Image (cartoon, rainbow, N blue to C red; front, side):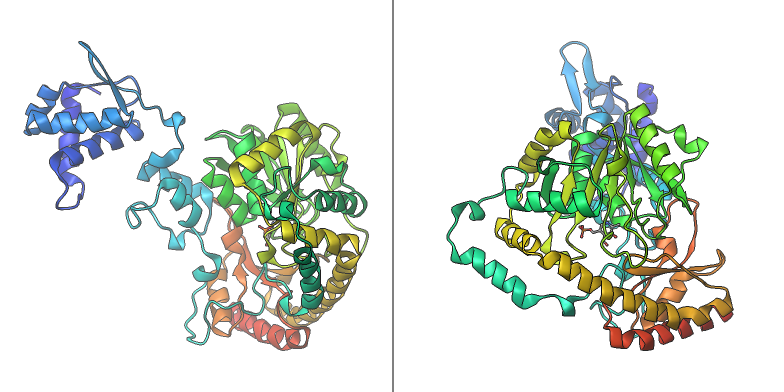
Length: 519
Ligand SMILES: Cc1ncc(COP(=O)(O)O)c(C=O)c1O
């Protein structure tokens, strides 16, 4: 930018930006120049006007400009070379998008999600970093569905997706297993976990996955994490760089998107069809560094990825040397037919990182999950996990290992499968009348939620609000979509509500949907 133009531009910015009243002039000038640098209005290598010249142009004292420049120098945005002036040194790619401009954020938001009604931005929440805004500035699922009823608060409501049957948890048995660990003093259980997690638990998980999910592994490949979010975070941190592209399913799991986005990755939505993730020719033009997918039970739509699609994705990953994150979050709950084998089990080239969680089978607050990494990544992931996250909870890991080894895990899954299968059937029956108003109920026979689809013109957020007014919380399908895609419907969890109440609640929800879609 020409120096005269730059002075004029700075002057306009100074006049039009809203600064706190007490902010001194040098600080305002610093702020405006810093913003110009981080938004690349002043790119790396650009020479700044001399302090004397700038002082004249902005009609401030030279000391004011010197103080502003000093701060920019201290923070590494510029460097001065004796005799030749002050140059911009900051390169956006050197740092995380802490300084992304508002316009850039706005641009990202358009491809990020359709969840924007409660967006925070750096104007209404200036104390947050851009990373912070990405982490908590978009949706809060529960809170986006407004309710007019004062009786409905933030407690879990029937049909809230992602909630388990807490009443059926084997409290007494779990207490006994925990107490057993505490009765035998064992200092290693009090330490952080250094080596990828508690060994007997890693072995128990490896045995379980080999048999139940056809995962191809040795126990060395299993790392214990504090759940899916942490597993994805670790993959993002260790396998990608800022601004790398990641393919995510559309519609898809918003929490996974969140953690990928916070890691500075560019989300590229890939639509799903009845065979799962369905990359188009357009998608193939954007080579991802990671692909996040839920092949055994697409979240939230529920389809199983076809054999053909699996082969396609694996071959593609091998060809372009990308990594696939397979999130196998609820495969324990398949009510009919044979279990679906994992994608990882078909992978001959070590391109798949397989994730699982104990949130569904045990309880979400246990914060334990696992990550199965290809053999060549084991050592790096072990040290990454330790260096970045200092995992712990070893006593709970030990109790969980006993829970699995002594057969309680298998019988607990069997029992839950029976309970959830029954709830699913009852809910499907209660919701059957909604077909009369054109709503389509999913027929997928697995998982812990049902999907009801509406016409694309329907306002599903409004339907969810009407349900919330009745004390029933279901999430609008449109909240799971990104970009242009606007699928409408409801995601209805049935794991939490007691079996004896499902029909009553289901009838109530069917009434809400029918009257909303009729009007
Ligand atoms: C697609 C998907 N993956 C993973 C999880 C579980 O995540 P976490 O292990 O962080 O509890 C959920 C929970 O609802 C989910 O929907």
